[in-house]
Image (tube, rainbow, N blue to C red):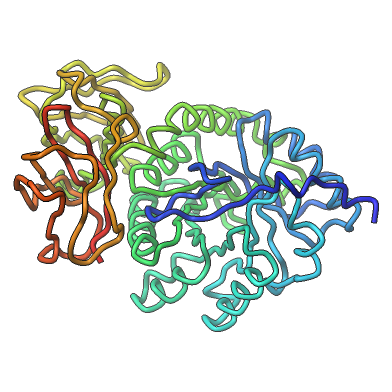
Length: 451
């Protein structure tokens, strides 16, 4: 068949690493994409160009909307422009023939084996879909999307999000236009914690469509989509997809019918691109629980001698003032990462102070006081096994290194000096921790999981 003209020797492969990040050809990759369901045939070629020019790197499409020849043309085009494809195997989550025809195309990164999985499939059915997909193509990840209903039961959360390589939570809160967006953080954080324990990846799907049939019939505002995006990021999501590019009410696409909203989405993809290395390789500390004020959220990343701080107010009506303890060793000057955000935050006596308006986001970077705070990539230090349940071994450190371990809230839970390159963590609770190593060469941090 002429349309299978591909270079199988440079086939794209995807996997999930021990910290839940997507590995694209063995390098960490942050998917920022858009659902493109509801379109037919070669409309996808045009939409791929539109999404790529807007800064997206991933598009979710469905296998049944194109013939084999159209699919081949589409995948070849996406490879040429650098757009990756996540393919939904609708309607049943299985299509071995389609997978076998197209799995070697370099734009393919994964297969959707369950949309609204907790509604459409039982756990055994979703498991079967995953297993069949992996049997036909074990070089690409499987993907499923679940609704927020899974948070009604711990068993549902664990059962449905531990099957496929990627589990994505659908968060569509904008019904009347005045919603509190707290859920964007809580569902992303809850899913990410569960997925790391299951050694798979947690993504968030955010609403870009208008609810149909309601009195208000509103799209999310620019402020709401901005807040939802950054709430997901500070909660630890490993990828973001927006639902959906299709404007069903007008049988069109949102770049045409919602131009100002589309402009903001393009700005958001550009901002995530700037922050990409921080998101992929920085050490994330979530401090929202330390603030303990409703609708106030913040996290920071340690990366390349800097702290990157994001603070968010998820309330639609109330302004919020709050503060939290900063880690030692950083300057007091806050530098905005992006010029289009306000700057009303400050640092004093090692505390971060914020005063945010409704739905406001502020993003800063802070330099260290010393050039000895180094990213893990600059020192030849390895920790293993990860995850572990008892002993954490550390290769590459000098004698009498100071070891500190922090939980995800930034609280120190262990402090010692090591002379034998190993740390006993058996007394720690199961979860995610940050290991901090200090010696004459500087400071290194690394995340690990206690099982």
